[in-house]
Image: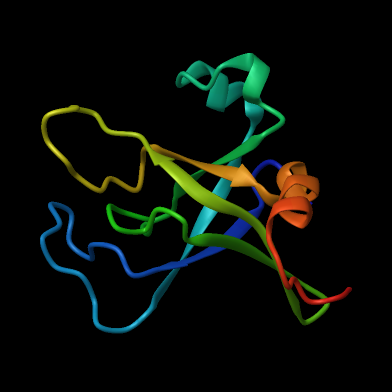
Length: 127
């Protein structure tokens, strides 16, 4: 399900302007593009965690501040599948928060953490 260059869907309540400060009153959605693990590592993702995360870059849309914990989805045979949860948005300048669709965003892979989730989260729906 994690394929390089694959289009993935994102949704969230985060900032909707490049410099933030405004959050939407409705859930927003966008499209991003999956990037390879090698590109993720080149941008600083440690090799020992590469199986735990997947990375994407925006087309002209991206997640932003306030979207942490938002999901990434793919649509397959008219069903949506949750791939991951947003965990890190790359910044060009650590002292200036900007939402730049060109920069990589890292998502925790739900499949990798599924056993932990099943063990620690109560009242999950049955398969």
